[in-house]
Image 1: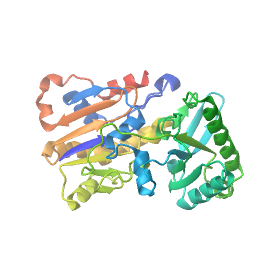
Image 2: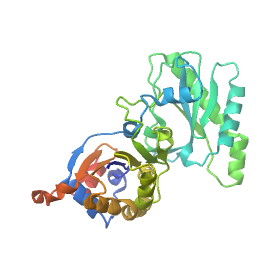
Image 3: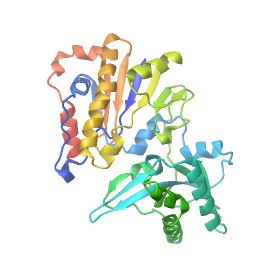
Image 4: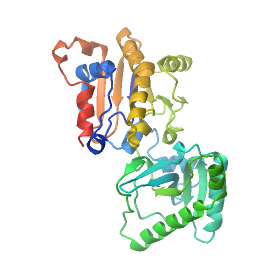
Length: 342
């Protein structure tokens, strides 16, 4: 079986800003893959990483189909977010990191619809953390997907459009909904139970995939935006042993995607201690057992894929270890430093 291993946030990007680089003591597995495998680097955004795991050419089209909307229905996405602002930057977390419930999403969308009753916009709670907004005409603006603006930001992207009136209308709606959320009963309840508030929304158009993968490739992932992308799909397993058990249950397919989120949040929010702990846990539960599976032949190959300005793609095979002349090649520390220098 061939395994594609997706590790968003693997390359720590905050050394230049914080002066700190994670101290990782157990990188032997990654060192071997990177030194002996076929490794390339290229800039890869988080949305581009998602696109590689998608079996649909458009997340928007997928959502409209699942909601029973016609293909020509004009629509865009609305993601509930938590925004925090300090003197020098701001950070954004989307609803999937806030443990937002479906009931909360339904209540907020109901009140958004009441507020916008005459505007032609209708909010549909497709998932807890991902809402669809139907509108009278096709949007003429662009904003990046929510996955590309999460984390620490120096500036917030503004809508790109030749229609200044539409941009002003969109920004006004966003501000009005933010004010509505400030006094919303859902947030009052979340305050009372010491949960983070939903204090903003992020509008965005779509998450397209130019080269969708086959839906027959088994998918193991907790990533919210990857739900419904494979015919055989399960949540991210606890460890590689649990993954093997599930793959055996479905007949050990020829290929599988494993998407692990554990490094994503600490990398986005510059939590160096959280990153170090998550990496150590990832190494114990997955990286070392995966390397053992590669060496004993139960895995034919592994492709490691991550995002960032210096995003990695590394194809590792058992036979690669025979390339003794690569023993002095670049290990993980080299790529970590290169990413941190951006």
